[in-house]
Amino acid sequence: MKTNECMKVLAKHRGDAVVVCALGMAANEWWAVTRSEDSFYMHGGMGFAASFALGLALSIPRTPVWVLNSDGSLCMNTGCLITEAGQQPKNLKHFVVDNQCYQTVETMPIVNQGGADYTAIARGAGIGQAITVDDLADLDRLMPEIVAAQGPYFVRLRVEAEPDYQRAPPANYEGPEMKYRFGRALEKKLGIRVFGPRGF
Amino acid sequence: MDVNDKIHAQLVKAGVRLAASLPDDWVNTLIRRISKDNQIHHVPVCREAETIAICAGAFFGGVRSVAIFGNTGLLTCTGEMATLCLRHAIPVFCIVSGRGSIDDHKVYQEVQGRRTIPLLQAYDYPFRIIDRQEEIEDIPNAYEWHRLQKRPFVLFLTKKLLGTAA
Image (cartoon, rainbow over all chains, first blue to last red; front, side, top):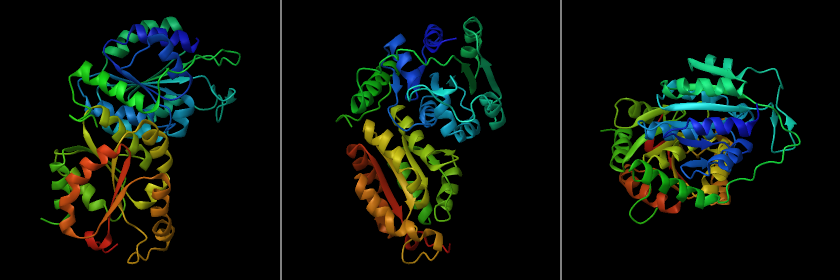
């Protein structure tokens, strides 16, 4: 399955979930499919989108939080799975878009290409629900169950590498604007206060 | 009320409700104090940079948070502090042991003692060193101040303040 198709299926089942995207292709595709401002598109901190999502999930425990992680980011910080398992956040779903390459840097091969089982690593870290999906129809069929289940839930999305793919452009705003658009979107959506009365 | 009770009380007063931490000899008692009750939710992590991202995420959930670790850990996560927090102007409040000071004779802390402050200055991360118990009461002010700085802030705790034998 292709990443863009995957994102369309995820978007269809998203419901009220707030989404955190690791930097890279999956984030660009999520933006292309959803144009959603209640999603955070990380522009740095590679490896730490899952940690960011955990902090967010623990802070808004009644709201579903998804992280759209990537294989490169997960490899950079596999310890995030142990930290996540330690907290057992009921509202967190952890998707990893796994194309076995660094898509945004000339599709260079991922470390130990084809040799690491991220789903087994997640299970070994203490995340009891951890599955691999490599077929679009299966993903569509499984998503209601994944959405309804209590977290943490780890889903490895095994997608094709797309070496000739014309990459989707990233969101058309960035940096501090990302902070304010996302924060204001959550204030509106959840009725919480992210910023103080003077805006900081 | 000992020094760690006082720090805990001031964090609560500042509205902190989540702490992410990795142990260091000097801040372990504070971490244990935070874990002791439910006023501040404790998140133990595998490496220090996780605390930065967890606190950044908590910021968007409207929850005030603090990252606690040792000076060595601070050196390991300055990159994430830059590419995540400076990039997106996200404040993160860090409490860090001021290792490598003149009264810290652990050889493996020596570089941290010499190079941490110049490194923070290079990134323009504000910091404050507190080594007297009276200064603990400044924590709520420091917390408000770091939010308007919109970047990581480091509060160093000294050996003299903590009275640690380590």
